[in-house]
Length: 405
Ligand SMILES: Cc1ncc(COP(=O)(O)O)c(C=O)c1O
Image (cartoon, rainbow, N blue to C red; front, side, top):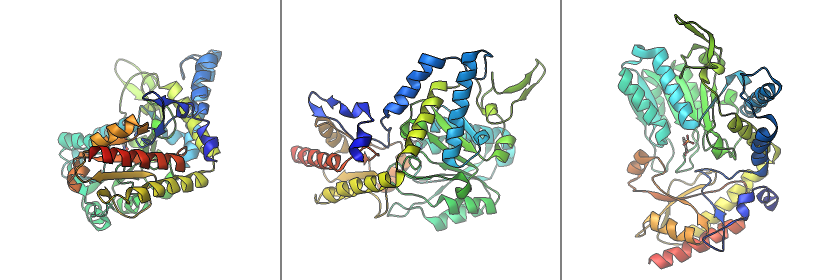
């Protein structure tokens, strides 16, 4: 199965630094794109390029149909109605949209209430809430993590129970691979009258998601981490909530009627999609989701686990290596530190051998501080990675460690 999938990703055939075959293990930053996605984007420009929701002509109708069909695909993927799917430019914009719309909708009533996040959040799920707190007088409260990298659920329950307006939590950590029990967190939020938001960026690519089962008010993810293009993201919003939320940006397409005196807005999701949308991005993301739905996800997930375990087993043969986080299913994310060696130096030497990994703080500075680290070397596995990639990773790692002493 693995080589079959691999052949669908043209970029994986290439070499880097001269003659080094590429081993791509930076999938948590962005995944490579299958030919089905590249073709869908090219086909759109070759056959149907026009603005969506604008022209009455044939191409305009085709572009609109393709754009809306992508929305339907994503709705089915999340087990949600198409009207609850808002296209954004990425996960970061989806979170900014929520923070801004929440501020505009609830304004001064947020003063003194808490916005609850966790210590393991990506900056995209920290900074928009800080801005909201500065503007409204709401208080940012942070759920602690335990030493094994799991969320302190008792602390989560306490924070959500006390005057919480919004809880916004990663479904899966981009550094630790921890999967959070977001179903329980959303239940607590509901019981205490708080809104719940889940950042699904790292989770959706490895797992089936049903927003109904999670019980969240909003779920966000970016297209480029699920084999789709850059510049497109998804905000699922519970329909009753989207109807209440004030718009994020204003302009064309998000209106019902405009006069100089007053404008009325379109119903969601268009209310939240001002201006010409990223039509090729939506179509490419729809193709990525169709591609993802066409593969045997259980087999792929098992394979990702085997590759990840082979990498961890090999890493733990080195006595100076520490794998960050606990002994849990980490969905392909491995963050490590090596005593006496800077992660950046290691990453550079591995790159020279054709192995692409990420080093640094991974946009999670508060988490790094909590862990007492400057940064880590992170390898992250996707559907096309093989045991062969794991071996090449381990060879490059050992050689680099030897070179760095
Ligand atoms: C958990 C998590 N949330 C949010 C983001 C932000 O995604 P983007 O930069 O694509 O908007 C990322 C990206 O790394 C992420 O891993």
